[in-house]
Length: 232
Image 1 (spheres, helix red, strand yellow):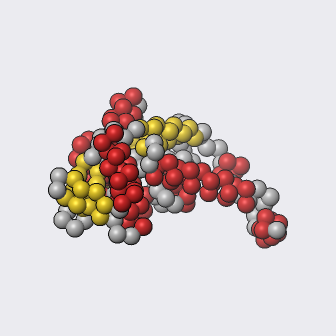
Image 2: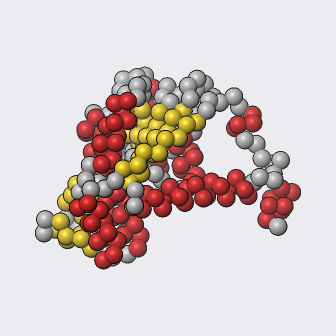
Image 3: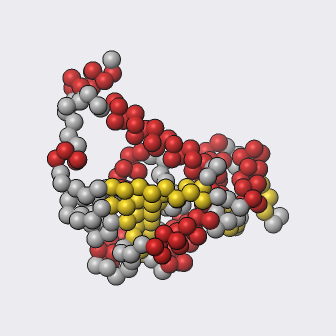
């Protein structure tokens, strides 16, 4: 079978077996959309179109629909046709507030959309590390140097090759679809030299596409672990 074939050709080396690293702790923080926002969400899901303040937002294709649903789970619906951004709820922002208030030390916030990164960055006066960041090296150095408590990052920009062991807390404002990116973003703080346990907060909007993304990530991780279980 597939597992036996892999076992014959592969050698598995895990960080856990060969490095002395700190523990990982995961905290899923569930939020619930207000009834009005949830109704808009279900309308978009069922009809591929919603109207907000006489502005019609359409999702002509399945890929666009999924993107719009993810935006709505986060709280903002963006009309790319005219550039109008509609805030339909603030539940994830409230949860982000609560997490930041209860934690101390530096924090990395991961977000998939420019609208979210810009809003969070402006609200908290944070550093950013994303496609629109003018000087990523400066953002990196300022964060390592402790000049700002919070850095907001896009997984595609900051998910690889960066060491931020000055920080041990990450918040997923929204999750990446890719398991590889999800695991890589975790490891920006889970590296040699980290002396504190790594804490990961996942903010998830219940009853939305967030549930599907979270379920798929867990299923893919379980499948990956099962596939390589017999490799030594």
